[in-house]
Picture 1 (cartoon, rainbow, N blue to C red):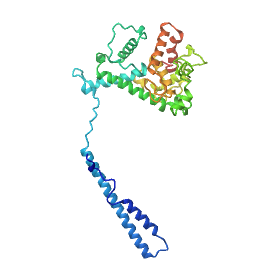
Picture 2: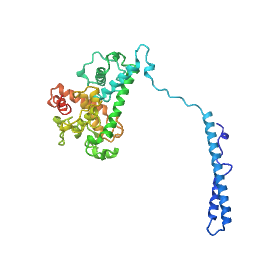
Picture 3: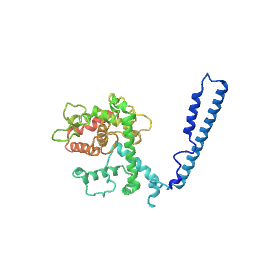
Length: 365
């Protein structure tokens, strides 16, 4: 737009000058002045005030005119195209909107009982027919195959063959993302006072670091190494911590069980959990929606990661902590590997782990 189209920086009739005159007239008023002088000053004040009002009205009209001109001549912005997977789905897919909704719900369920984070390419990788679950942690490729195997357990049978399509992968990922967002808000806001005794240290990122860094495994730096967060030397993960790892109490930390109770039973789910009084409400909760009657391995390892995140300096529940640098997906995978290795070797701590959780969360099931 040519520069001449823009308004002048100075109006033709200056409201500033009119205001100055008004102030000068006001200063002339005094009880000692004769009545006729006061009346004249009053008339002048009213005249100046009207002049100011007229100037302001003129300026407002000019601004409106220039805004209208700018709107008319400005380059139109491109409209953002929102994803509409169902509408864009292949014609061979029946009822794509229904399929999308069902798949999104499966993604939410997956986060609750399986994994709350997965590798980004798990929906595009080719399925390995020769994959052996016992070799899941032998390589990155095998780990992804293990995740894929779990996802297929949650996908409806009639859409498993559509796994790599945008309709299915997008809906499942949306469901996972939505559940993570809901979980993070519940843990740090809605249910915090029901999970911990004192919420004040949770107010800021720095206050959480100062209060809980050691609790979640922070190891200070030394002359020979950088500071880091240990996956095992984190007291919050243990039912009893005496300065060293004790597998008999590993992944039995009270906060972990409270977190899972909160996720499946609502904001008050952790109340009375260890006294056998955790309410299993009749309202529509995750526990009822997904017919959860026992503890899954995913629930345990997810609760471990969520407990660390909840007490960390990190501000968002994402794969890599924005403040700590903790890779929560790696932690999740590591704890799963610990449990599966323990079960494979018939270790008592692992064999009894689910029974311990069930005894507290589902005592009458």
